[in-house]
Image (tube, rainbow, N blue to C red; front, side, top):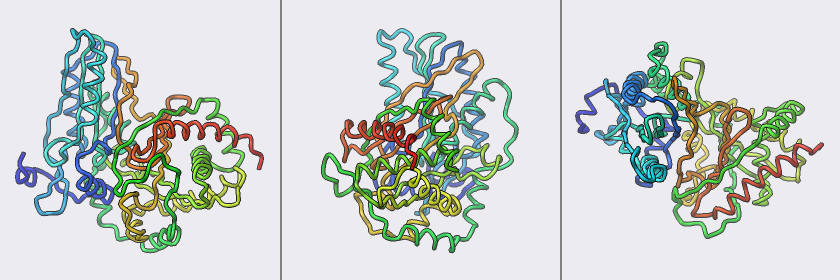
Length: 427
């Protein structure tokens, strides 16, 4: 569609501050996969590909962000929701290929890493690779401008419901309505002042790097896996209960401890995403609701882990209270020194997803997750954990401009080693 056709085709809404930040960064950095939200499953069993396409089309009609374009016609980006879009999986048949698995991996890599054109295509795409009549690989990529982590279980649950012929109940809200409500809210001046006071003068992260920092940061990155086994998770829960904290706070405090040990710093800031959803009506939507808050913690004085947890707990409660303020407004209020080699206010991120992101349940089909490639990292260091049923699995992402793979692997190992040591710390 042309820009004029897009502009007159459907409902228009402003970009949220988070969406605008993503859009602006992509204009600055150029085409990239850094904002791709992806998952893949190996499907064993009789899959009806035509029925899957019909379910995808129904899913797109249900959720506005999946049929949205970014219109640049008037110089300012706006999102236009198209009234009707049909969707389907791109099908690749490798059932007779002599090395089908390897070729499927190559197809998936191209599918996941190829950048989107947000002004001309759906902000999501689906690849279905057929390896045999009862063996497929389904790969889904969404652009972060239309979806966050909590959107993935909604995507999977609703897709499965349409596939079963049991459509989910009608939505009571829409993402466009959410955006308009948010845009109409005046800035919270008092909360912004508190953020300005908390973050004024916060130093940048100063981890020792394997190579000189480039003048302009790039999205080049890598990942190393990390697993917190069920027994260790149980011990973390017990420790959290004993100290009046949450499991997340204990895991975050341990991340601060790792950063403090490796950097020697006494003043550290970490970005933490919050869901941004208010109530079940918004929880049923696909969209970008996530807001990032900055946890700045004083780690001076070589505190024991119980004391460090107390400091993190206090910081977290303050951040939660003011977590409704868009991060972009916080950056403007704090106005940190401009530095193209770093992201503003924080360079490390910590995330724990307390839900199964991509649990796909299709009738008669067994779905098991398939790892997908990633060659980008938005931040210098990021630790992300998610539930896999009993324990936590995830990855440590890192900037390859700064760190070697071995350094990131050491950081992941340090995280688990320190966590076990800290759970024995009586102080």
